[in-house]
Length: 264
Image (cartoon, rainbow, N blue to C red; front, side):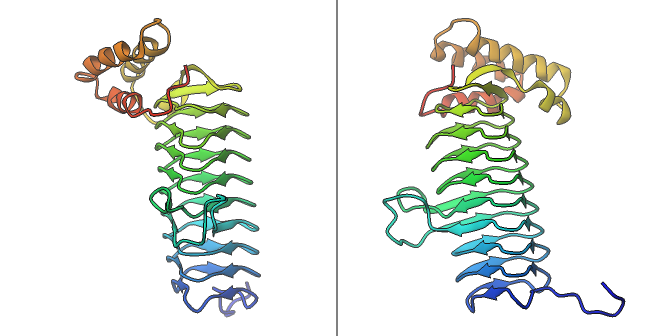
């Protein structure tokens, strides 16, 4: 940019609905289409050729790359034009060709994405998904409707998750993993159908879990997946361990809350 030239915040070729609410310091690139009832907070940058439909609320300091489709109608044959929404938090990176749908009235009517997520090219996040914060979704990861994802989960490229599955915090899904049941917190899975392969030790080290905490999580994992115990009995033992090992609480909660059954 030449000295003295005014910074273009909304490109002249962008089409912005009169009912959209765009912060003064947000940036809208060339040939974007921003529809009705879209809110974009300050510091967020929308690159060229992005389509955002509403009701959609996008927080501060996000970056959405070219050719993404954000907040459009859910890909659900039951959808009949009801008013539903998409909420995106702060500091998320959404790369090229991503598709993120609004919710449906069959659920809470809202798709939710937290903060600081890294969403790579061609990722699809379907209606009514609830994504935590600090997750990573590699290229072509696909989430069907109503999927819940905990904080710090990582999805390998081309991994796919069936409707209504829950992915626990700090879980790791290998490349091409096919998920049709719930994945507990801390657990690494791979394969089609996916099976447990251990805990996400490397990820936990990077997040400053101590060696004692990682050892405790491994012990709890073995109780559930390696000792041949009934799940109900394993949960009782993990609950007892969690009284003195608080890092196990998120693991325990993901076991107790499972409705589709666990990958096992």
